[in-house]
Amino acid sequence: VNAQSLLKDAVSFRLGASVNPRMLVENEAYRNIASNEFTSLTAENHMKMMLIHPAADRFDFTKGDEIVAFAAKTGKRMHGHTLVWHNQVPQWMKDFQGDQKAWEEMLKNHIQAVVTRYKGQVSGWDVVNESFLDDGSLRPSLWADHIPDYIAKSFQWAHEADPNALLFYNDYGQDGHPKKMQAILDLVADLKKRKIPIHGLGLQMHINVDSKRTEIARVIEQSAQTGLVIHFSELDIAVNPKNNPEYIYEANTQNELFQFIFTSFRAIPARQQYGITFWNISDKDTWLRGYFKRPKEYPLLFDETYVKKPGYHSLVNYL
Ligand code: XIL
Image 1 (cartoon, rainbow, N blue to C red):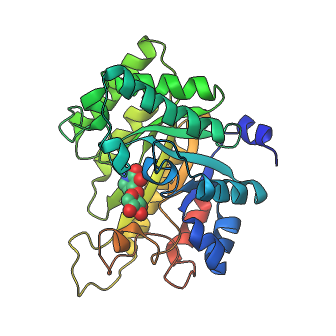
Image 2 (tube, helix red, strand yellow):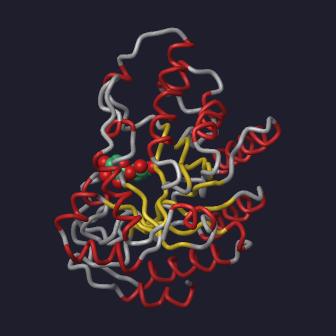
């Protein structure tokens, strides 16, 4: 599989997972699942600013390169995550001093260096991640504070560096927060009107068993109506959202919701189906356990021993 053929069918339904490069090397079961069960990969962390651009004059592409090489070797589509975000920003960026022009140059340089590094190997980029608060206002951040219109500029800069890459706006919690959803729709309309290249919407889909299907359905419908390519970019379904320490895993509700998510995605016009990406491989690897310290969480399709959970089998029909 070469880069060109990967790009040509960049928009074809893919089932993906985000991955951790150390696990790909150290854990054979993990590596086999990444290799055999998925057709698209995302770096869970290693293409983010903090890790890929640790000092003003230094990029560290080592781990990103490893994942991209694994993707190429195993014939996966590679999805890039993420160029501009308010989180996981290196200290030197937080300390950066300069006028608007200097800030723009700094961000442009970051975006274009990363996109150029992976040009032809990464099919699509989450260019801007999580720019809106739940109330629909622009999230205060380094970027919002220093660069007026930073979202549009970021898309433009990314496009200049790789005109073939699909460019996504990615965010979470659109269900339950209609004003946030509206802000995203307004952004898309504004970028289109100004002929700024945007090709896709990423709905992270960090949801839980109490998430409302009607709201999820509305968000999917509104997203699809933009005509953009749609990616469920970080899917996991928390089963124990209140982090009850006595919780005992019960899979039925979760499985039904997984089925609902898959059916809804597959109902989007085929030319807009970029794919569904799970946020890591097994229940042992989920950020809900690591980052959020919720040991009794089981949000994915492989259990702690890397065995397929029953939910996996019930989804095969929807692939
Ligand atoms: C998370 C990772 O899963 C964690 O390992 C890391 O510590 C923090 O970031 N939205 C995003 C992802 O766009 O990049 C986040 O990933 C989860 C929320």
